[in-house]
Image 1: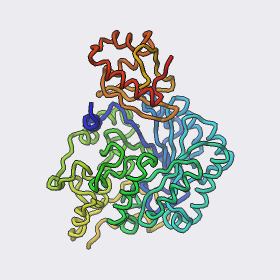
Image 2: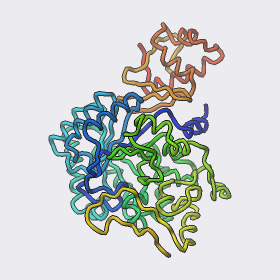
Image 3: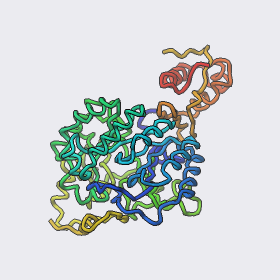
Image 4: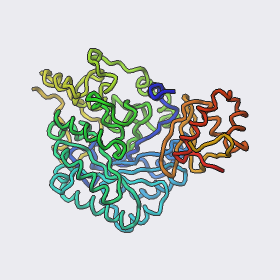
Length: 376
Length: 88
């Protein structure tokens, strides 16, 4: 079976997700300006420890091999280690994303003693100035301190996860060197206009010239850097980047949010992409296998406005979430289309309707509400 | 190629298989590699490796026509090189 046939089959969906993201809390000590889930305050409906363990039991029965735990800051939950241990007991591998604040020496040793645990520390700048402009004052020092603790505890190769933006794109070599110095693995992902990212997008997303720079860097570094397949929109620039080159939303990935709602992917926390809830009759399994939303996402793609462009097969029209939260049509070009088709549409729009995320747990006033309508 | 027809193999105990419409997913909890087994016959061979004396015996038992054996040997070889299966 060729790779293309495999992708065609993956697009029709699997009996269970390959990789599932579970954000276990909306609580966060930071207020990153690009937070996908607009996290900050705790949601009172957050799953209880018992409910969280029941979710893990269901994932075990579905043979979900590993999950990505995130938030919010997942380590803020009092039962964080309970949840990790329950996953481990049930042979579910866990990779969790953290800002590092709560990885002190003791926690680093505890984490190092566990099997099947992988840690991803977020860092968005190679120096405090670049990082803290996005992630908040003091966050660079906290992340580096966590990395030091993990190294001292002999945790092994953790991951350093960078969201590539306009101001850190020139630091990719430095990030790689930093990761190498810790024996860590570098992970680069794409900035999305989701959550608070809708507000910071215009200032942060890489320019057209930088898109090519990212593409070339990824081509040169190939398999030594993880990307979560998030840059396939760049493939129209030449040879395909490593990865499946497809949108996995509702097909091979999905998101369970802190209150148990199930979304197509971590970047689309919006009613339009909500498939159901783990509390529904039949639980997560029923939502994954039978929800109208997921079944529709497993239908063949329509190239829509991209039909006339010869590159649809390489870029697949880009990312659904990036289009949705910039007010573009889902069957048209990505806002960062490397041929400029998305930017053209954004420039032409006189009135742009930008959907507001359904969930917003931002702390404070003013951060939270992207203007629903912006007129250019 | 290091895999041979007259050797005995087994699935690494750290590997889990999950049936899927296209065949199966194999996940190695140690090195965290995920592999797509893209044909039901390959899945059957991998599942039954430990049941028979040699790889050839497994292929025979499952009813794989000898014409197809070379492609199965190379599939098993790539699983061997990613530590999904091992010599027993």
